[in-house]
Image (spheres, rainbow, N blue to C red):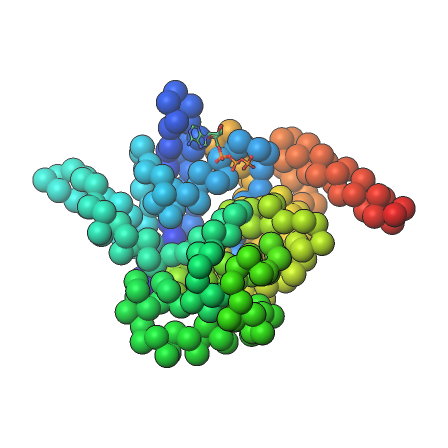
Length: 268
Ligand SMILES: Nc1ncnc2c1ncn2[C@@H]1O[C@H](COP(=O)(O)OP(=O)(O)OP(=O)(O)O)[C@@H](O)[C@H]1O
């Protein structure tokens, strides 16, 4: 730990062919901060956190975790890419929760959670299991510890995936639209688990279309468009007095969609 931000992005660029999915993104995430990334489809939100987690390599700029450059090292006055083992070691200090929960089907719920702490972080199994049970308690699934993923609903599987992500005590947890593959009635339980982690001071970046979650839980909201951060700030400011016209029209579209959904709900 450095006393600086937990995560720092400077001028990050990611190209897919001719197209810049990230076009010079700079962002600091402080320890304990919850940053929620919003923006239209294709604006680069997922690419941003995939680059942080080193699932995608970057084409320019730099990303630092606790002051350590990710993916590259100084070599003969320039930079060279790190080997796979060192990248894996850096990645093991972060966790990511995906849209699709990807639990290992032939492992029990508890084993899904303890596998990385035991195999990657060398924790004694008994200790990892005790902590795994505590985590399951926190996500409301202690009674499912010895079930298999197929015996759980999508929302329950996602809560297990979140417990798995935080079991390694990551410096930062990245969420990529964690509720968008779920039936609407399962979304709230997952968001409640994430809200609990935020209240405990976990450092998080959350990509989501859940505007109420962004408004209520984010310390800072980042609005992206065309691979750039157009505006960022505390949600109370961003949502009430957006300065960019693009953010204003994005919020209006979402507001209309939410108002429509609540009318349908109250009429049903
Ligand atoms: N593997 C890939 N190959 C080619 N283009 C890609 C790839 N991944 C993303 N892109 C492109 O990069 C841009 C940013 O995509 P990204 O998935 O980051 O957007 P997003 O804001 O997360 O969108 P959504 O809200 O729809 O998930 C898009 O134009 C997308 O088509």
